Every structure is written in C-alpha cells, then in structure tokens.
Length: 113
Image 1 (cartoon, rainbow, N blue to C red):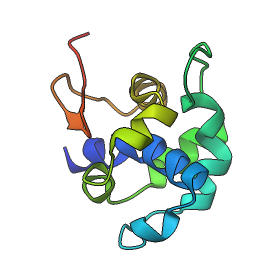
Image 2 (tube, rainbow, N blue to C red):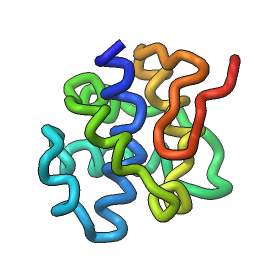
Image 3 (cartoon, rainbow, N blue to C red):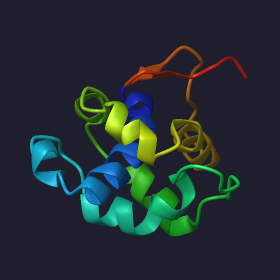
Image 4 (cartoon, rainbow, N blue to C red):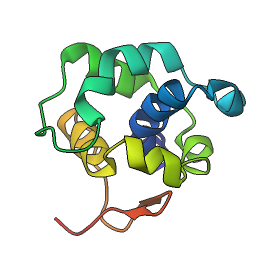
C-alpha cells in the first residue's frame, strides 16, 4: 500500500512544483524531482490533452519514486489546477502500479473503475 500511495501523487505534485517554482517546499520529500518532471510532465498536464500512454522513461521514474505520503500531504488547489489528477492515476496504472479506488491525494479521490 505504501508503494501505491508513493507512486500515485508523485507525478502530479512534481510537475506542478516545477511549474510553480516551489520545489524547495517539497525538499523534505525523498524524490528525484528533476527526473520525474523531465520524464513524466507531458503525460499528466492539464487540461484538455488526451491521455497518452507513458514512456518507459516515465514509468522507470515512477517506479523508483519514494515518499508519496509526503507529497500527497502537499497537493493543493494550485497544483490541482495545473495537473490532471485523473491522468496521474492513469499514468501510474499504465506503469503497472495499481491505484485503489477511494485513495485520496489533495482533494482528488480515485473513483471506482
């Protein structure tokens, strides 16, 4: 469960943090921000872009990410306006990490499939 939580919100959070320039605020979380943002931002951005299957590089970064609980605690309205949390779930699942319905990160709750 911890790995699931870790991977779910990391993509959205890291992309948003790089966009809004507040990576320092997440300094306590054990994450390779640059790697995740570089490899995954194209797949989770808002608003109207279609869902795209993530690259092997993105999935590699997702799988080695750590400390999702730390990141989920920092997801806020500003981040959710920049990143599609639905796409974050999609990318996480496409990378082979199950995301259970009912998990919450920020104000987003994963719906039943």
